[in-house]
Length: 119
Image 1 (cartoon, rainbow, N blue to C red):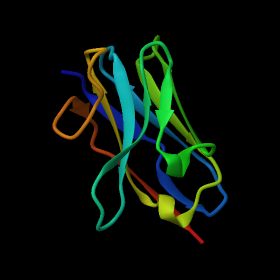
Image 2 (cartoon, rainbow, N blue to C red; image 1 turned 180 degrees about the vertical axis):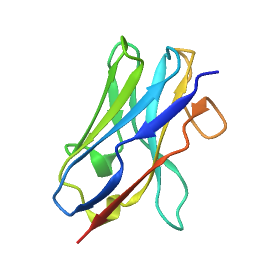
Image 3 (spheres, rainbow, N blue to C red; image 1 turned 90 degrees about the vertical axis):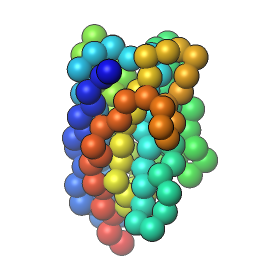
Image 4 (cartoon, rainbow, N blue to C red; image 1 turned 120 degrees about the vertical axis):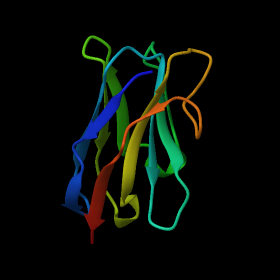
């Protein structure tokens, strides 16, 4: 089991940027960022595998960038052009298998970091 700790959340005005970090206690195969807005279900927004291949949900494409530093066991999410609808709790998750992508009930999860975007 890998322990994950997110950081970097905060409050920002629309159009601003934030960089989230997720420090892992060990190595991981696939890693992902999820978010949960008030009153909504948690959803996956970006993934990255050990080779650096990435996927994004449509709502963040072109604005968010997921990266990882395997030497530091750290996952990042650079968020630019933030919108009020990006307000949510952001979670990182990981799996130890290259054949499994983090999902609800699957993988290790952090406790989350809050991002609030004001208009």
